[in-house]
Length: 370
Image 1 (cartoon, rainbow, N blue to C red):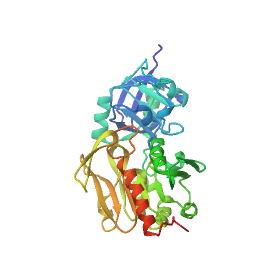
Image 2 (cartoon, rainbow, N blue to C red):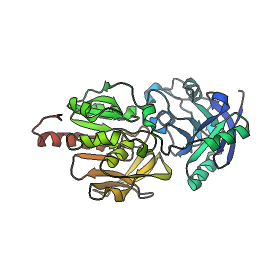
Image 3 (tube, rainbow, N blue to C red):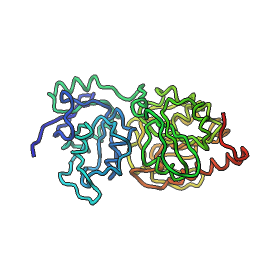
Image 4 (cartoon, rainbow, N blue to C red):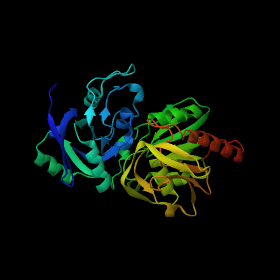
């Protein structure tokens, strides 16, 4: 097999040497914000998670691609990440489920990658210096260094518009009716919601009035990419919905719900990306092992008087969940649907189901109205 030399250059000038995999990038250069994910499995779900738009994913697990890929594990219509970085790319797939190898999958979707990287060294560098932009590819080192110096992080960028659906569509056959804002929604989330409701997925720009015209039992705010402070059109719509229909948010949906009630967000040094983050459920004291993928978090002080913190990250104390005090709405920063990851927090979809029942009873059994 022909090996093409490649390199990764971070914006601070740090260089990592490797070999090109996946698609051949235009002019031999790919740029993006470099982050790392600590999950041991689920690389296809990670690559196709729209929350990675604008980012280059480094896999800390050293052996990637060994069980191939299958359409069933795709979390979106296509990958939105900028590229992938791995230590060892498996040259042979071994799973009865696989229909394609990872390298062919990346090439088919136009996603470039780099293998042979010392990902342990790269991860330690990002952990110490923080997530930062970089450039990788087959171009000359000086070209890559110049591209890395110009590369942008996700700060200040509304990436939701790049990943949201163009038109509404419906999934699931559950008894309730839920409208889901597509901020970068994952397929696994829709599978969970579809169990309890018929779900109409709408573009992120959908006004609250159009949502209420659908007379939903509840509204869901999905995960998504980028800086929540840059997504300025969604929080006003959320504010119009609060108190008129139950609301449940995950990840970016959590951050935007908090923004809508007066909260603020900040960027974490290197984010939470992986399937092994411990979170304490404050109501019971129980600990959930969770799947996470976010670079920003909610400032706890900004929630005082409007929301109660319900979950907390045991690694760094970050707010992982909250419940509004005066309206039927709650959210979590992590991913209870997993895909990939543990299923400790799957009960939250049942909590949403119960919240919709409670709200309907309080309204005499009627759905939201305009």
